[in-house]
Length: 325
Image (cartoon, rainbow, N blue to C red; front, side, top):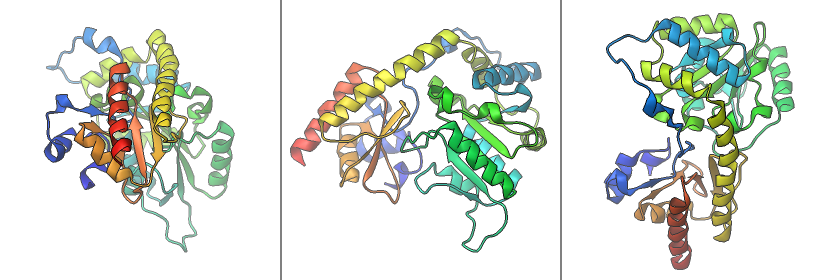
């Protein structure tokens, strides 16, 4: 099970353990939009040229406009995970976060010892992964004030925030504030392989981040795809409407089988079941990959099926499990 409890995906390990080819599998192990932004097919890339600095500026401006943030305080990174790991090095302080959270937090930051009295960073994912808990802006801004009084920082991980504009505090990032916001491109736009994310932070911290990353922080594909996707308002608004509806359909299937889905994020649902590992294995035998969690044997996360056929396939596999359990 160790191959499947760190990140979603891992179809190569799934094939090795349970058989089949990647094309045989329904991958519900991630929180990635299964209906990706279609504009990539129309973009021609010149892979012979180095990434252009002007293109990087345009990408950051387009992304910042989408976030409602200051473009001067927006820095592209090769995935939000890479941004978090870089922040751990730059801030160089222990960090606190809820126990059920994205595993990279514990890898990027050390935990404060029980007798620690110095400043700490507080990492709050909004919405949280994997339980989908969504905090209002007021909660985060109050947490920021407490952190600043103690000389610490607030890191708001908004990797899944694109469907929750009213909860985002990206626009509150400013010079002189101890606030960092991280954002992800691949999850909402369904293009995780592009490896693109953003760090929004005060200028001195961003200067350290840019120094750490060098002159070409992201590849030409990330520059081109991100710049066009973030200005595609029609697709963005349609996705914001469609994703919650798809999530409601997933909820209906899970609920029909006696599972209680939780979470505000429409890209995934978490369920609690006494034998979550058994359900994971049964679904994997049917070549459906879900997401179990280390140290939480009762929890299983379901990503969003792309269409009715995928949802029906999940429904049938759940029927078999509960009939035979």
